[in-house]
Length: 457
Ligand SMILES: Nc1ncnc2c1ncn2[C@@H]1O[C@H](COP(=O)(O)OP(=O)(O)OP(=O)(O)O)[C@@H](O)[C@H]1O
Image (tube, rainbow, N blue to C red; front, side):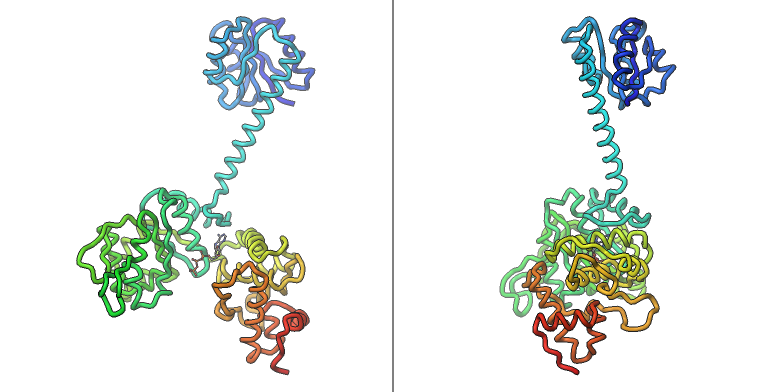
């Protein structure tokens, strides 16, 4: 049933229309003129207004502006193309010529009501999407994460330098990628550099490039990563580890928009937006003389602080579900779900390694699971303060070789095989199984299947 308002000054037509619409199951209200309709009814409560064009006082089309969002059908006995076009221009959804055929009118009313419902549903969906909008596929609905998303949305369109802060594995790189993706530079390159991963002696020339002969081994001129990011964004992860000479060069680049290659006598203009991230306490490093204060101020034009996972417990179940879906897709397993005891273990764990730790635990569980249900023992999480094996360090796992496609089940078997081979000399079967998040029986079965011999009794 829909609520329909008829505005018509001729009682016979009004009654005829009311009967017709009431019989079709609608709730019908009536008025004889626009001012009366506006005074006696809450116009935005209607699903449809049907108004005569010629009325005592203002024309029927005046109702359109008074009920924004409500579809208005205009009727007139003086049907001309011009009056129809005028009514539609003013925002009427359609036009009815009098005298009208009952069936046709009902069909027209149903169509307008259906379209109105769709429009309202779309608007509601749009509102919902806007409210729960998260950049770059980031999951989170806690107030702290909503704040992060809001900051990303505000800062992305500008050219401002952004400093992303947060513990390891909280999603700093994801935020940087989202800022780039939402920025006018999205079509340009995004170059991500982990400042801690490049040997100190190479960092300056990697970032800023070098001229031929700048140092022993510089046999040809080489453009650095800053130049490679021209027209786009350079993301400097672990900026706290940047050595002093590179800090000085970066500061000059931020101040002048120019980069000077190592060994060069002249500078080159570059158009690069800098995003930086660190898990370090940068003000403390400034105090300790390890980081330039002027560079720190240049970098933190806007700061985005990512809270650790333990401070946004409400996000954890949705994150776990999202990471599980992703892990299954990546590894090529059918969709899986978390058992109630797995969900409880996840909720209780303090996640010192944040989202990355959760991601690793879930991925490991998916690899080791024999079916579509992920149970707590597969996650192998230690209850906080509980006895037994300390939380698994990321470095305890051998890295999956980059040359292998991580989605291939073979590389996952290899992952398992290497972990067992590398650790079995210093771990018993029980500890190995616990660290892998499987039972001793499953470990034994996997050893049999993969032909990994036991070296210790
Ligand atoms: N809110 C989130 N929603 C979905 N996935 C997330 C979220 N936060 C982090 N992740 C995932 O967790 C992993 C770690 O995130 P990321 O690399 O961005 O963290 P980081 O803070 O940059 O870590 P590090 O300090 O160690 O460099 C990534 O695989 C990322 O996709």
